[in-house]
Image 1 (cartoon, rainbow, N blue to C red):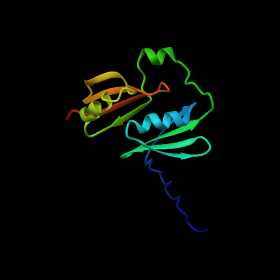
Image 2: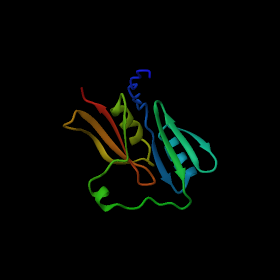
Image 3: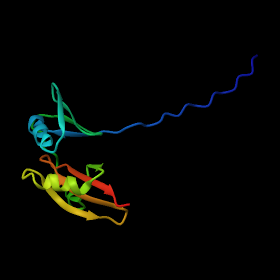
Length: 134
């Protein structure tokens, strides 16, 4: 009988992650994100990939979907996606000039070494834009 040693298990490396937002009106949501500088690639029925630079956000449509209100998440200003940039101040200025963009937390430094601001999209998803301070 041959002496066979067990091969070490191969460990998969995670490579990327993409947030997926469920929305009720994908066309309106696509237009809103295009106003933030994203490009939208629509794949019928009801799927979209939003892209800006190295960032992607996926949209899935469910007709008449409304994101449920979560009082606890609302009270603690819970995030839905955290996006890092190389110039958070320029991005804040860009978004501040767009009346349809609801900035819900102004540009502010954090004790964990980031400077951030928050935007609420038209579906109630909170996007944080950030940059390391060091």
